[in-house]
Image 1 (tube, rainbow, N blue to C red):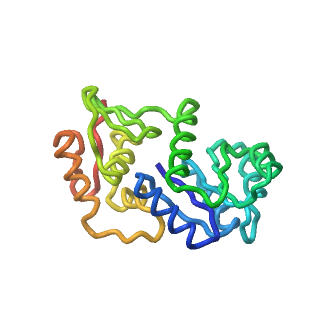
Image 2 (tube, helix red, strand yellow; image 1 turned 30 degrees about the vertical axis):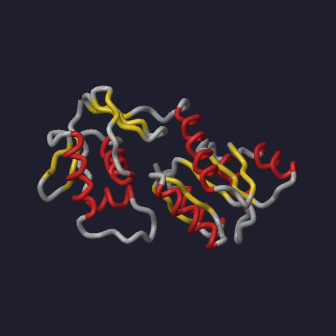
Length: 219
């Protein structure tokens, strides 16, 4: 699942981005409110972690813009504004949760997962392909009702494919789906993840369409 981290403090942003990536999320980082507004217009994010004291456009104004256009994407405010009034204002403006800086990174990740689970009841379906089931919110995969252990990147590649069963996705499209902005990607990274997925899930599940890309079988 893809998260937009909106934070102007480089030290905090790098730590949060690294922690969320290690937890299995694809994370893009916007350093100011204007860049975040442009990124959110694409509609590709499952959740945003939002600082309030942003340059160019304040976090509260950004949140208001998001909700005014009817976007119900979960938003977790992570801010040093620590009064009760600040927290109430953020929640009433449409934030789904509010955590105070400095925060524990494990707690932030737990809150992100909780918001995604909550949101799953209102529009994030299970993805299924034959005996295989992928739960995007809980980040679990089962085959024949048995849990399958995947790495974070293996999960992300499989999720990207299962979101469009039968469609052929190029290697470049898969890289775009599972790697955040500015991440270095080795030339055969996707092929390695696909090889590991085939070993764990069966060679028949993911098909190679020569010269085009990859797809999961429908049904």
